[in-house]
Length: 486
Image 1 (cartoon, rainbow, N blue to C red):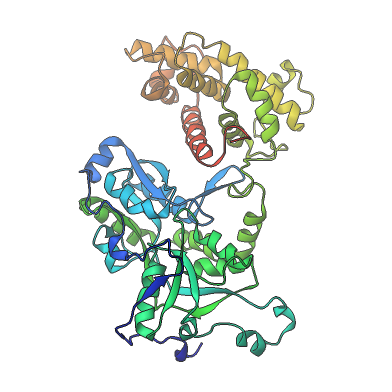
Image 2 (cartoon, rainbow, N blue to C red):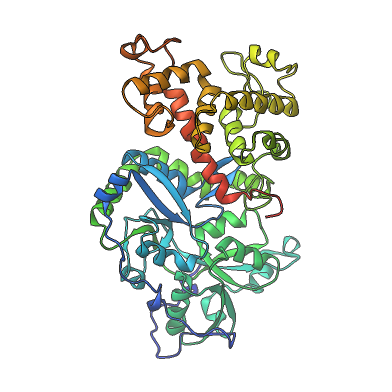
């Protein structure tokens, strides 16, 4: 690309951008958000007291999504590592509208915005940005001619906008409070002509706007180049080579009154960027073209079909007898086998729900690899365990006792319950009570006590088993409707 394609710095006193719709008033990035000051006092100390880092993000194909039953995304994977290093649990909060990100943060609905935010002067007035994660530039997203594969390169280029000057008088579709809007305002001043802006609602993601270009609903939009490039792998008709901005830093953000959290996150980013995994994660979501194509085309990518796995219908069917949310049962199945019906454990447990041979025989399961029969048998066994915990009135707690029993055996969980009672803890409460004593059963000091009848157990396994199933269930609840009609 020649330097002619970037005509910047010609600050002429002309109107920057106007709307192509009379119903959409011109807006300024200086009015980002309605909550411009923090409404809560919550820094790292208060977050650690709560034991939870709450991250606000956007549901899209790079930041945070569900694929084949597993929560994924660039932001999500980094956040899980950050939270772990800070000794915190992670909670994800999805902003329904990108316009709301900054308001949600300052209202205290989360502790950090974990989304690819361009650092701008206007935004720095209302939040503090972390150190940047990566550098990119803004690119014009446009369609090549329909018969572009049969045309020589020079003819394709002739039909494309290759210089921002050629946008004068044209219309670009973008979200109004995005960094792209701000850039177009400045660009119009610099090139001395009007670029018309048609604003798109804040709940429409950049990927969805790019798709509108592909489907000829609009002619132009703007995207960060790395996002545009990964989308181009799926939509080769796109041209993304016309640069609209200089390099820009992409970062996360915290409230202005969270200086200690900012220091901790920045230190973590500094350390993480020295590690190989940081770049592996970046490449996974922004460079791995085959993975992106496979994900976007899959029915089990949550933005496509609202499905967790190919066994959703079977799990729904047999979850009804338990009266459990089928998505919770799905999370258990994922924990057991990752939805692989041919999975076999070192101990001989097999199939989707990893039933031990003796249990499978008792339940009449002849072929553990048969998905329908395996899930039927597994949910039947869960029901039998559920019935053994009738003294626990709280449904959620009873489910947790049932799941722990499914993982390590009813007898071991009863041991943990008796231990909890002997130490004057609540024997009917799993959270922070019986779960602590299931952990202790891996220690000789505890598994040799008179209350313990079944001896040693790897207590960390059922402890994490229950936690991970419920954490994954929360992701499923965010992305997958409980009923097919929702």
